[in-house]
Length: 75
Image (cartoon, helix red, strand yellow):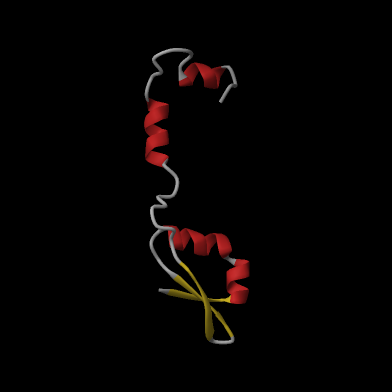
């Protein structure tokens, strides 16, 4: 478990959330006393980057391809 003061949390919230998404709980302290804990939401899997990459790699069954949409500045 990672520990961060309230001031550090305010300054580095995005980084701490990334740590939580990676599986690390974060204990937030004020004047050395624990006041809160950041934990991952059950079932939260973050962004589905693998699914997005697979979708981009697949050719659509109808309509323009991803490559054509990029070329036409639609993506």
